[in-house]
Amino acid sequence: MQFLELRLEGDYVELNLLLKLVGVCDSGGAGKRLVAEGRVSVDGSVEMRKTYKVRAGQLVTLDDIEISVLPEID
Image 1 (cartoon, rainbow, N blue to C red):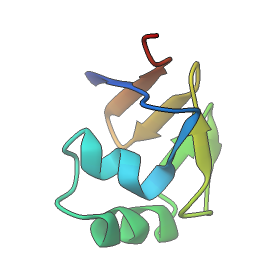
Image 2: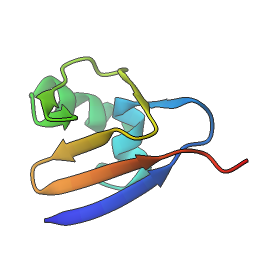
Image 3: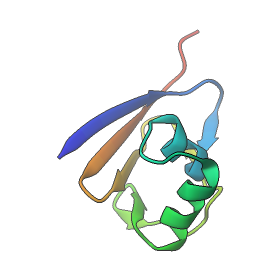
Image 4: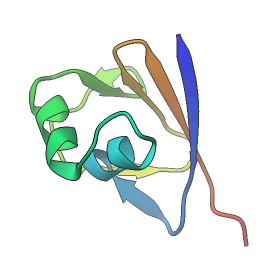
């Protein structure tokens, strides 16, 4: 399993953009496809909303990749 982290810049990041920002896909559109295919989970539940607001403390999973979302630094 691969473990990645993303530090927020603000209150949240949209799910499709998070996948792009951590480098698991090349674009937000590719991230939308992964979500639409039902391959992405947030906190253990499959998430089908492409622009779901992911917040600090949540765990996003795609195949064998886990992405921890960290709060922004003040």
